Each structure stands twice: as C-alpha cells, then as structure tokens.
Image 1 (cartoon, one colour):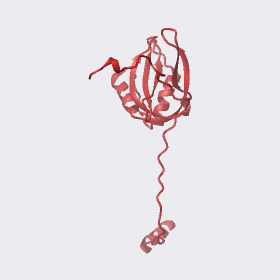
Image 2: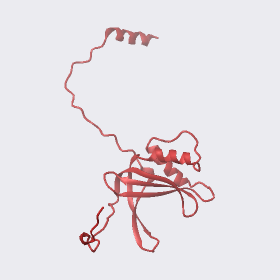
Image 3: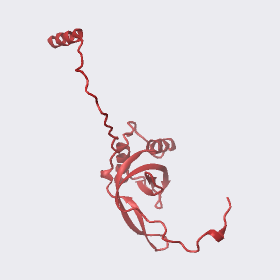
Image 4: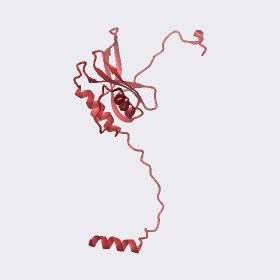
Length: 174
C-alpha cells in the first residue's frame, strides 16, 4: 500500500463524534475473557451498532481477584444470553478455557436492542473523555421479527372432509 504524505491534511478536522444517546441495534462482534486491572476476571465485549463502524466496548467484571462473584456482572452476562435465547442448561466453570470459549461462541454474532448513553471519564493522561455505554442492562431486548404482510385474495371457504369431521365428533364422546 502506497502512502503519500503530501496528500494527507495537516490538521485533524472534526474527528470522530459519538452517536447521540438513544436506542440502538447492537451486534456482538468480539469477545474475550480477560484479567482485570485488579486481578479479577472480566468478560470484555465489542458491540457494534448495526450498519456502522461504531463500537461500544463493554468491560464486564465477573469475579474479583479473590474469586468472589460480582453479581451485577454475572447478571449482565445472563441477561445477554437470555435475550439471545442461548442460556446454557449445564453448570459452567468460567476458569475453564473450553467453557469460556463456549460462552463467547454463544454471544458472537448475537443481536439485541439497547439504550445507550454517554459516560464521561478521565483517561490515563487525565484527559476528559466520553464513551458509549449501555444505560439499562435490564432493558436489553431481542430485535423484533420483521413482520410481513401478505395480501390475501378472497378464496372459497375451506372444505371439511366429512370423514374427519365425524372422527372429531366421535373423539368428543371419548
């Protein structure tokens, strides 16, 4: 790939702007179990706003360094799996790499609707930053199935087979 710096602007004009807070259709595009800064276990997810390149990064703590569960993080995981209708029935050991991979595979490509808001924070250099976050985890819902309307032409009333009608009547007696 060739690059000519003469054709690149000298100044950054505008830059990337976050979408406004609101309801968005999200797709799970990346997931990993990772060690948190405090030594605990996180489930980190990239959720892409469908039809865009905008990614919501979710750092979801599941266990502390002492292996104590974070109920809110586990509830978020369960909520995602519930909305995707993929809650495993078996007991899982989340320190087991195979079980971690199974959870990730259940989530990847999954789609849901979520309310997003802006979250302000300071980066490592003390600079004020703004990121997208899921505003209400209990509000996650599955995308509605597309409703299709089929124009129906007037037809004759359905014909009932007399033999079947008699069997149904006989069934009522039993």
